[in-house]
Image (cartoon, rainbow over all chains, first blue to last red; front, side):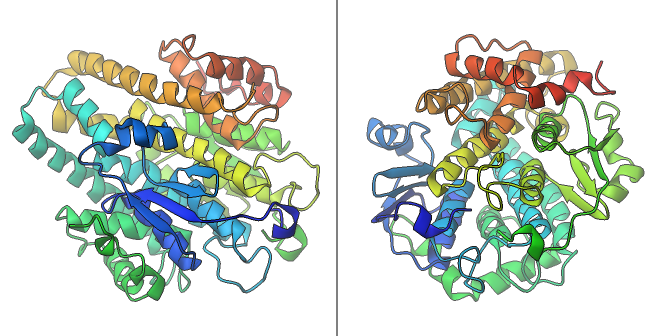
Length: 236
Length: 236
């Protein structure tokens, strides 16, 4: 990775477009808080499908949150945003010993990334965010909204149960309480919002001992408290 | 990132467990070929659900391919594998000018990663690989297999159309033919297998001018030819 004095300096301000109940937004806020970066927060109302309005599409044609604007740079997708935040701050790359979310050692880094991928590819999409939910309803289910909601609840619960059981097994390879052991990493930044989101849906984490311990350990960290989605201005 | 002389040397041999029609396996093979790494290939028959058999679960309890075994290290998830391969080879990090899939400049790197995420979170899962397909059928569709297959075809086509249109727009920000412009990157390693997979399903890429150009440009590269999934021993 290029050291900071080789690249153009990053000029703020930082503005994050997001939604309190978006687990991907929560990932970005955790990374910003971890690195102690001040940012403006612009809530996007996903329930009102504000992300599909021309005002937001002018910022990001993807119609998704989070979006991080840094000066005139516009960054999308949460792993890209979290990785960018780390790369522009004093991380282990440029200052050994500085706090870092991405482990420096290649194998450990790969394990952290593999956990992020499980969350972003197998868990988050299977909680049926907006467009996916609408498309599943129109293509597969002939049911009305009430019955479809019940079907969706069953589907999400089955997918969460299977994938969180596997994830709990992955956590069991280390002594905890975090994904890779004693130190928090980018893996926790991806897992924690997903676990809180599952709890908000009424999903019980108790059967997953290591995941439950992780949520408790995370909730005690100052940067995690500072990233509380329920403290965002658009939270209920 | 740690330079190679700071970490333990990586001892081979490399063994990749995969399946010819798995687009995630193809990502890993592209990275191995890009970095000119020899590897043994162990085909896993996903149609026969060999990934759920005890022999494979002993290697990786996730029941997913690809898995990369390097000596006694076992790595799962494709972005983690691709990132690991890059980090243990002579990349731009340790030897400026050496071939690299991950751009060194933070903003460009973030753009590359954001394209990988679109593919791995919004496109690949929506092509309904095995477990997701079975769960959707059992929770949402009361239809028999033949009707469900038609429903699935319609769903996949709708999701691909929407997401490939957006991806084509992302490619349009650069002059091409590759995702980020003139140089191949990890973004192409994720996009190309997905586009070949879509074509195998009978999906027409012609309406997506930049994506079509990318597949043509990719197909001409020596490392891409060496990673041809149809040349794998388990291909039909």
